[in-house]
Length: 70
Image (cartoon, rainbow, N blue to C red):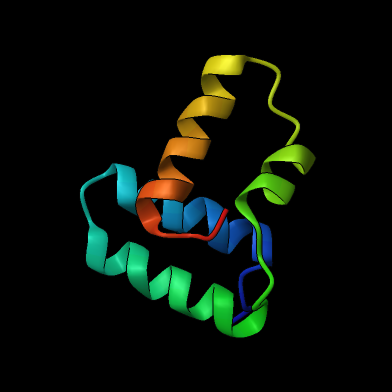
């Protein structure tokens, strides 16, 4: 199977966290940080093309809840 990109892994971690599935979110975070130890929520959010502030905030909340570093 094809590995997820860093961005896909971050979105998946956020989605799991927001869906109340912390174990799955943690697994995604562990894999993402193994592959990209310097991952930053702030840098990731700056690159995501979300137009609505509410969407950006929702993603930020999910990334934080998943445990990804600022």
